[in-house]
Length: 391
Image (cartoon, rainbow, N blue to C red; front, side, top):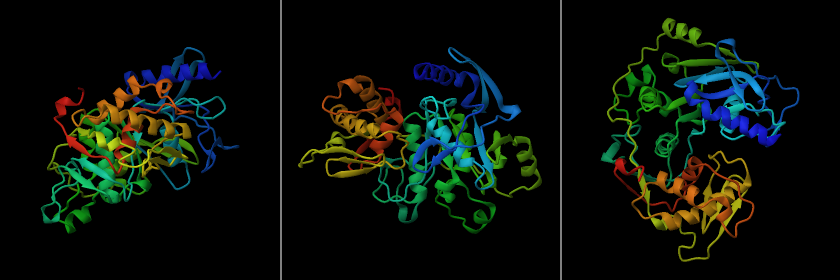
């Protein structure tokens, strides 16, 4: 049964881009979980029912025709009151990059393969990212073209996460206002009038640039109404039941203008690829080599404890595999090859069956392996010409 389910899942996932969709949520899916520490479906939960206007169908090899909600590409807002299921839907989409076992409740939740959740992470390390599309003109002339810090703020960490995801090839970005720095999401009319010298370009002013790059955004909002001006699709959650509210949201935006000025950002939304130096991935660094996973949130790599809490790893075996692949990156890194190319090469050349001496491994995507590398405090990089990205 699982093999058939996985094949049907892959069938839908492969066809999402051609249908102009970033995700599919099947009719009758059970999205809520038993608890915050359990992935079991919640008993008695309201089954998912697609809004008629967003209902689509796929005829899959084993289950035949399946119906559900198709989320179009572009900017999608998931909104609604507190405790009505906004974040629950987003969590299901985050998990929807992988197939689920029968009985999970989310078997027919399918998300674009290159989707990634991004969020703020106070205190994380950022190395060599060109943050100018979001962070610029800092006091005392500090340059952000090659930004490095061991203690990023909420806004700089979110800016870095967005740009790192683009660098690694993400095509859909999933965000929740609850875990995103407000000052990087939006700058309203009052703050524009009060603070004339702003060092941040909010995501709101970059939505069109993301669309131009072919990158879609799915954003959970409950209080940031400025995004209604730009939304392509609005899904309103009421008691765990979705309703399409795009036309209603546009009417609200017309009736209640924000008065906000939309200017041309000073710097283009461009990603500078970075090439890691080999020593970034050396677990010894003069000391005993140690590679050990600690649950889903931490990886002990040499003397460093790598914080993976912001990554969407679903099994302990994926954490162990991440450490094993880091050792392969040590062999592949040359200070010239971009990170995206390195992680893709490591995953292609060094499959799980060839990672000797490390038991119980589970596959990770290039997006997660690259994101884990970006959280190594030992990471050291050089920026390379964008034309070398695919080398």
